[in-house]
Image 1 (cartoon, rainbow, N blue to C red):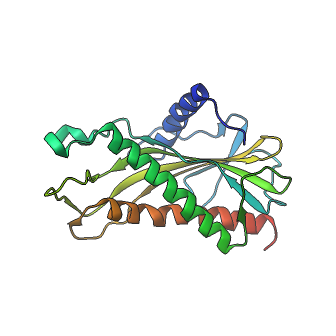
Image 2 (image 1 turned 135 degrees about the horizontal axis):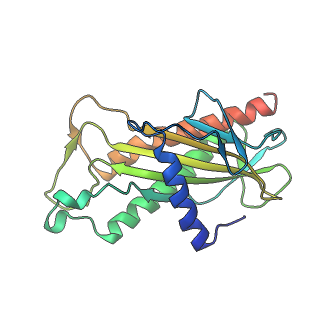
Length: 222
């Protein structure tokens, strides 16, 4: 895996957070037409797609998923209105990151398997590397698992996916995807828990994996 170094990871998350902010509701500035040599291409399934000219996903039969990196929205401060034991600790924030990363890995792998694409851990000539980031994550009511504390919401939150697609052998970036999604509203106020928050995230993750599966299918003539 062409892993990012810690310094480059931090830098890249800052960059993609800025780019991802362009697709968030209410952002009026024009969106970029180019990103590091990748050219913007219209795609009805995602907010922004940048591709390497002449690149193709044809021939890729397997996928290697990098661990999901998660960055919260810079203006999200869930502790601003919380007191005492209801405040989120650093362990709570890390738990959110790790839980979402695990859900991403399992949900994406299952969705890709539906199309016959195996998730692997080694490079190969038919292996597509996918490096996913969740940025600008906002959780309306994160659960601290504090006994006696209940929160009711109609919407679990929102997040933006930025994913790099690379050739696993050369490390060449073939495409980048940016897509902002809100959790589906229940229409009524419901108890918010870790389980319900994760349940709201899974359909979004499955949607993203389904889009990747469809693009691989189209490239391979399926």
